[in-house]
Length: 81
Image (cartoon, rainbow, N blue to C red; front, side):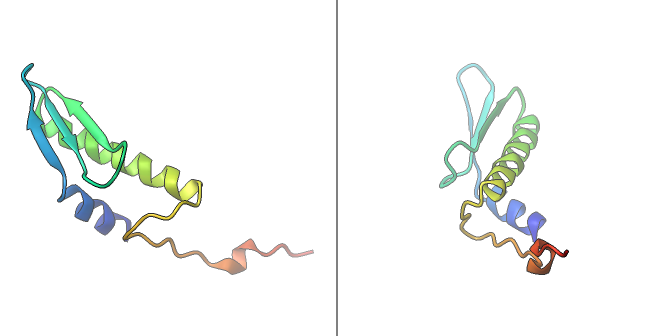
């Protein structure tokens, strides 16, 4: 579920070679999810890490993420005793 979400979003990523010969990557529709690096490979890796962190923060803050649904076992949320 998590890998599928990440891979689908990363497939939508847009990359640019900047004038200073570094790469910039972003995922349209996900504000704040961007990366820059000296190589395209490094930029892709960094963008994946940024996306993972972004998703974890959204889940932590209980914010809705289009295309991602976290399934939880509500029984574990009940206190006993």
